Amino acid sequence: MRARTHILGLLLLTTLLGLSIDAVRSDVPLRLTQALDDQSDMTPLLTADRSRPVSVILEVEFNCEADETLSSLFVSIADTAIAAEEAVSPQRVLLKIEAGQLDAIRTSAHCEGAGPRFLREAVTAYGSVSCSNEQGRVRSETVSTPIDLWYDCPGADKRGRMGAADLQDE
Image (cartoon, rainbow, N blue to C red; front, side):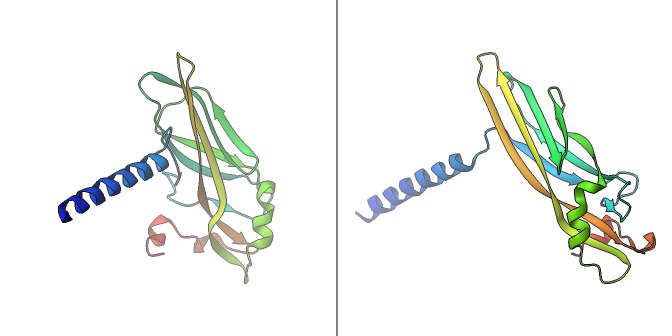
């Protein structure tokens, strides 16, 4: 009787785990992450100068199945977006965000004097991908990821800005 209880318990556990794995399994795997500039190895910089756009680089990876083609890929931050009907995976996407779209960050940066301030998860990037096949089946997924920025509080000099290596301990 005890062996039967263990077997039933194991079957129930396996069934529950199988259901939970299916419930969270992604329809079209999509990954969106912040990438650093290969040349400067720095997170993006937002300044008090509203005429200077902020350049954010995102690494986008998606996986359509063998019988599918990419229907659309959409990546956005604030009111800046890129859409594509053809793309390769993985790829880097550069979004140049008009500084005025990030005014809320300037007013909430809580500057305590002049100098650079690291803002973890300052904005959010959104991505979506759709894949379709010849039979008309369409699969899609939407994801979001936080984006870190540096903000130069008015009067700051650029020497205090840190690179990615300095952030490893945070």
